[in-house]
Length: 531
Image 1 (cartoon, rainbow, N blue to C red):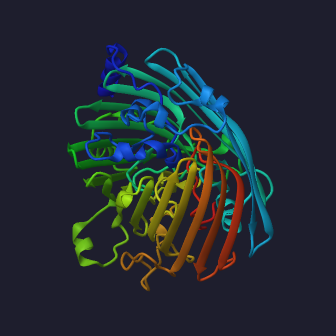
Image 2: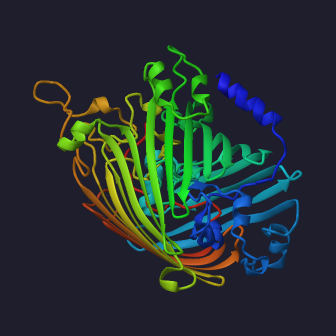
Image 3: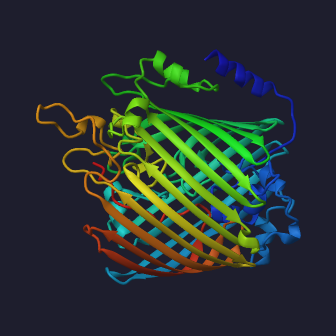
């Protein structure tokens, strides 16, 4: 705690320096014009830490004349990236209609909102954005919303199915306390990793309140992230009845050489207790220095501790190979034995991302493999699982899953062409837990004949295997690059084997105005039902 106070005093007393000012939104589509230069060889940007600061985007050194323009001049006048205005704002609009051939026909999505930025001097930035939607989801997303009570990544689903109303809002105050230090207080999302997925912290779940301190010096970038999460089970949508929990995370990124980056991630999730056994806020976890494990051990190991490592290697000018390993619990002897010990909770990722692929301007290719073992991200105290608002904080399928995905994106002026595919193999639960449902405790494992819990034999795909293939083709014409708002048409094909309550195959066509200001999360599956 003393170290926290010392750090706070240093921040307050820090001399003024170069500004980062504000932050971009967490959206691959908004970041698209800058992504190639940020990831290129010789760039020292820590691209695994998102959102990006406006200073980071300036590092891309794209001339104003080369930046994509809005279709209407008034949008560039107010919402342009480098227009010199201290106050900037723009609209956020969704208005699309779709048809699902194998279900009840017409689907729709309508939403409206806005974003606004204010620079109060060179060191202080204020941001707010908000959007509300009313929509009838495709059948498989409708099943997810009914099971979890949440529309993926966009908030609690109100109303009567199949029509859901939901909203999302984000805000922050960003202060450059020193040329090397930024402090941001806000509500929003964070992302650690180079992949489409992150096994550390993704933007899969809806927004949350946070305090983030970012230190950038030499080849190192270090993030302290403290956040308040919600367990919504049993609350029936009443915010006052959501159960609070807290997370404290560290991410240390080091550019070893121009082509190699290594990173260490750690997280603690803890609950303030109950009315019978109140615990309150654990100030020991405000420690801004690696590592949490000794602190958690000193407290009697009551909390959910996770540790991760990443390696990212640049090849050529625009190709990045990346990988993550995430550990919850680990015993080397049982890993070597391959006996499927339930407490060997690990996750791994390997991927490659290529900009300007094969020398084709605007062509981006991505291939990625993710593996999450059974019981990963769970905890004996389910209030301390790695989730927020009914959704995983890492991979959208939670645990007990393996996925291969491939993306192809091509940009031609205002036109964006995309093909996204994902093939996943996952397990299911029965009356007992086989490590699929991250909202079930490990103690609900199957019983052996002698009445003891079975500790071994848990492998990805157990209890019963399920396979899901999903592909989406999109073509869009950009209206506003600042919000990634487009006129867009898309076709989605989805197949599940074996079938469940939804159709085995799905064909979904959508056309209209689509806003990608926040990343969307179309790959979903009912893995559990919240009570």
